[in-house]
Image (cartoon, rainbow, N blue to C red):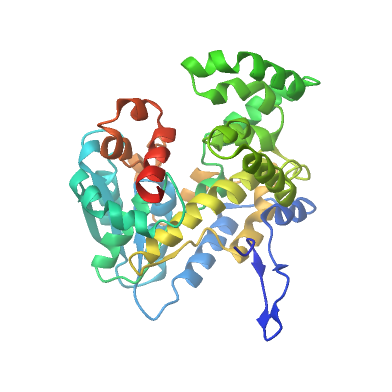
Amino acid sequence: SLPAGSTMWVDANGAHAPLRYFDVTQELERAAQAPEEWSPQTLRDALLDTLKHHLVADVPVGAFLSAGLDSATIVALTAELQPDALRSVTLAFEEFDDTEFDEAALAEKIAAHYDTAHRTQRVKGTDFHAEYLRLCTAMDQPSIDGVNTYFVSKVTAETGLKVAMSGLGGDELFGGYPSFQEIPRLVGTLGKIPGMRCAGRAFRKIAGPAISAVKSPKYAGVFEYGSTYPDAYLLRRALYMPWELPKLMDSAMARDGWAELEETTGRRGQVDGLPTPRTKVSALEATWYMRHQLLRDSDWAGMAHSLEIRVPLVDTVFFRRIAPMLVSDTPPGKRDMAASPSRPLPDDVLNRPKTGFAVPMPQWLLKDDPAALKQGYRGWLCKIVEDCYA
C-alpha cells in the first residue's frame, strides 16, 4: 500500500516513486525547535477550526458518541458551530448492562445536554453472529479491533447518515493511554542499566519456557525489550513478540520479514530526536497503533456500510497547529481538550475513569472454548484468523 502521508503520481509512463508530504515524527521534531506556550483559548480555537472543516458536506454530518472525552468534546463543540441538532449514535451491549463498561446512560446524558438527535442501539450476541460472516468479508486483514466501528457504522447508516465523525486520535495526541505512564516508567528504570538488552536476551532464552508456562510469553522479554522506547512500545502493544513469529509461520519468512520491517520503518531510531517521553510515546502510538489498526479498521468498517468516517483530530493542519503545544513543558492533556467547549461537559463525564470502548468479543467468540478464552487477545485473534482466513 502507499506509505502513510505520501502521494504517488501515475501517468502513461506508469507509477512514479511515492513522495512524502507529512510525517508525524518529523513534525514533532520541527515543532520542538520552537515550542509554544499554549492557552485554553488557543487549544479551543484549533479544535473549532478542524471541526469547521470536517463539517463541510452536502449532506448532514453525524457523530459517534461514547461516554469518553474525545467524542463528547466533538459533540459539544459541534453544537456551538451549527444551528441544527447534530445526529449522534451510541452502541450498548447487553453483556455490559449495569457494569462500568456500559456507556449508554452517560452518552445519552451528553446527547441531552447538547440537544443532539440521538439514537442508542443495543447489540446482542445474536446480532453479532448474524453479521459475523459479513464482518469477516469486510475485514481486509486479521484484526482484534473494528467490531465496534462496524456496528456503530451499521446503525449510523440505518439512520440515513452518509458521514459521521469519530473521536479517534484524541488519546494519541493528548496522552490518554496508560502507555504514556507505563512506557516512560519502564524505560526510565531499565534504560539506565548498561547492556540490559543483551542480558535480557540471555534471560529470555533461559527463563522464557518456564515463564510462558504460567504467564504470557511477553513477560520473558521485559528485560530485553524494556530499555528503549520503540522496544518497550512493542512490548506494550504487540500480541506476539519477534521471537515468537517462527512458531506462527515459516521461520525464514518470519526472520526476513521482521528484518525488512525494521529496515524500512526505521523503528529503532524513530523517536530518538523527540524531546520528551510524552512526545516519544505520542509518535509511537500515532504511527503504529493508530495508523495500522485504528485507522485501517475504521476504513473497512465504515466502507462496509457506505459510511464516510471523518476524524477531525487526525488532520495534518490541526496537527501542525497544535504540535508546538504538544512539545511544550506543560502540554495539553485530555482534560484540557475536554474543557474547551463553552458549555462544559457534565461533571460525571469529566470525572469518569477511563475504560476505553469495550466490546464483549470474548463472550461472543470464545465462550465455548475455555482454552482460547484464557489466552485473551491471542485467542480472539486466532479465532478470527481461523474463521475468516483459513
